Length: 297
Image (cartoon, rainbow, N blue to C red):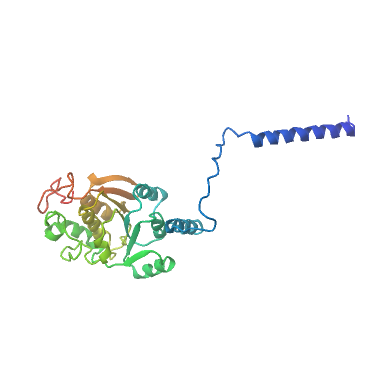
């Protein structure tokens, strides 16, 4: 039976009114599964001041960079988060990074107000990254080691007194000018030796073919710098690619399992106290350690 036109019009009007009431109710009543928004924060800075703080500007630049490129950092999100936890707690700090990479802008930005220095061994790659990010504080450095000598160096370093703890007055070998130790990065830029580093990231040099420098000297040098620290606090050392034989073996020998406080994926985190502090002393003399085999541990 066909309804008269007046009835159809009245029904449509009623439905429209009901729908309007329902929409108004939904708009004024918070949904139970949606959290209410906080009050709009006050804006105290004058309009047009922009990103005056260098740290804010660096974070904004890094956000745009990684949001608009398909090139991603070498480390996974979980690995970066492990380092970020230390930066959240300790920044601004002095951060020394072995290697320049697609993540260099990230480390620079995540340490606002701090000092972040990069060490790179590949001249071609150094020019590429510096060309893209000229604001980074980076140095081109040279290594004396080769990856295919890694096992020999690990077996023989104890025959070099200059490589061992216990030789100096404070029980810490020298790095600067220590050419007698084949594992010492003895000719780095002066600023690397003249400052103590709160955090060290070892993600270079190359270590995946025989003639590559490998990370042996970087690990030894980071361990010695951490042991020789005189300021307050420990040194947080991160080593990437510990799934590889050399990185794992050198970490266990010089960074020490007892100082490892975390890890995820291919990244290990060590927190190394200075040798002068109680609990980090090793027995004096070459070849002596807490386990009788590893002088640094």
